[in-house]
Length: 266
Image (tube, rainbow, N blue to C red; front, side, top):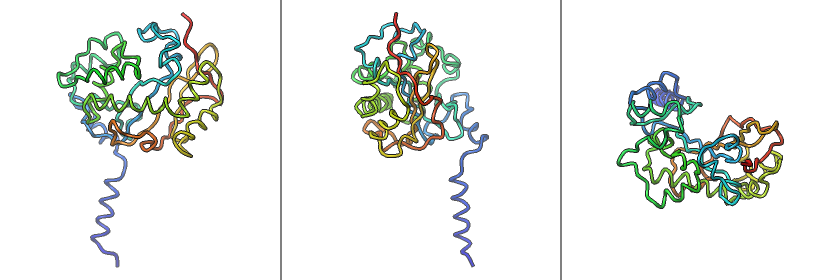
C-alpha cells in the first residue's frame, strides 16, 4: 500500500508546478497600481535590427542613424521583459506604477516618453546611461522611460542593474559568431539556416530552437526586424547569455531567405 503522506505531497507538488490559470494571471495583473513585482517566470530579450525598424520613420534615433554607428550593423536593445507563462502578449507590467502613469503610456506613445517621470529612486548612473545609449538607440526618444516603467519595475532589480544586464546581453550578442555574421552580411539577403547555424556556433548545439526571428515587409520583400530570446528568471549584470537561454514555442515569421536591411536612404 502506498504511503498516504507521499501521495499528498505528490498532489501538492503537481498543483504547485502547473501553469497558472487565466483567473490567477488576472489576479496578479489587474491591480490599479499595476502588476506584482517578481511574479513572473521568464524574460523575453527583444533585439531590433534598427535599419528595418527605421524604414519610413522620423524618430530621432532613425534620423541620426549613420553607417558607422553601432546599430547600423548590430542588433540593438528593444527591451528585457519579465513575463508570465499565461501572458504571451506581455501585458504583465507596471509593477507599483500609479494608474495615472499607466494611462499616460497605454498604449505606448513614443512622442510622450520623454515626459514620463521616473521615480526619484529610479535614476541610473551616468556610466550605465552611456552604455545604454549605444545598446539602445531609442534612448534618443526616451524609450528607457517606457521600458523601465512597464517592464523594469517588475524585474526586482534596480534600474542600474536592469539596464546593465540588458546592455551586457547586447554586447554579448555583438561579440558572438552570430553577431559577427549579422555585421558581415548587413545589407545582404541571407539564409535563415546560415544565421541559425551562426547562433548555434555561438550559444551551443540546439540553441537555434530557442531563437525567434521576426521579419517585416521592406520594398516588396521580407527583412529581419527583431530577434527574440526567452531567458530564465534569475538574471543579473554578470549573467552569461548562453547559460540563460530557455525554450520558446515562437520561432517568428521569417521565410527561408530574408534581407538584413541597410540604413534607409534619406
